[in-house]
Length: 320
Image (cartoon, rainbow, N blue to C red; front, side, top):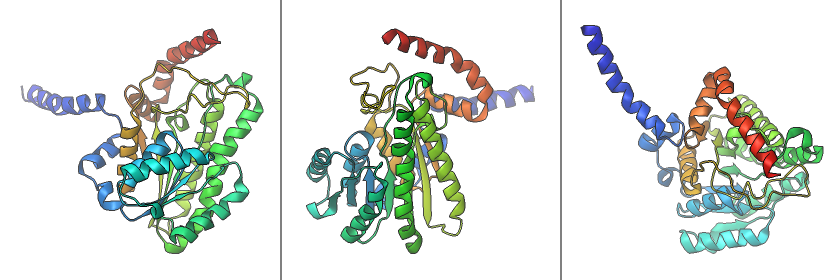
């Protein structure tokens, strides 16, 4: 009788947690920080934040939300017209003045320009408190039908460009013994994703680099290395993805998968930055459950996902 009562009590305690998880859109550590942790409005004000890939999607939304926190913003991407558009939106909707925003065009694949860009930011604002590595692109094609040029372009843009810029900024942070390096990765940097082998390879490489870098910075506790792993987000990343060739992009396409709102994703990113979280997952269900399953029971995950992957590939072939 006592054991039955204990089991019922345990079930009553566990059931609310299960129900909460079924509605979760981020890992449990991040959701706890959202509930009980430090607020971005307290922690990020008056900081100098450099955002790459700021011309659209997550980068644009991040710039907009940061502009309301009275930070100094550096906006970088290849398309200067789009950066100027984002700057105008920040000035219209945020709490910043013209002098608080620097538009700095940057091509991640042009690694020789990264040192000069870093010096330009330091001349303008005197310091870099947060570097947000957000620039990058994706592709959609079968591995054997993808030219090596696509693999090379994605490694140059997503991985080597990010590593290069980080290596330019990091000595400045080490000299000051403080700073945050935030890298927007992808759940594709944790999970295998069919039709995205080159993209996943570049994102897995990023995870390995920044985990190793974090281990090397043990003498610099004031420097935080943070890796953000979003699932599908409402953005143009699918539209602008490569196919099997670097000269072709997918263009307009519909993805029948649940996507988290960009504004919600960015808000959770800011909470992660305010609380110095080292790795966070941001994704709607069932993607979040799959990430946990892959982390702790990869064989089960393979079994569960194999049918979905087969269906994805078959649908892609029919679409062609």
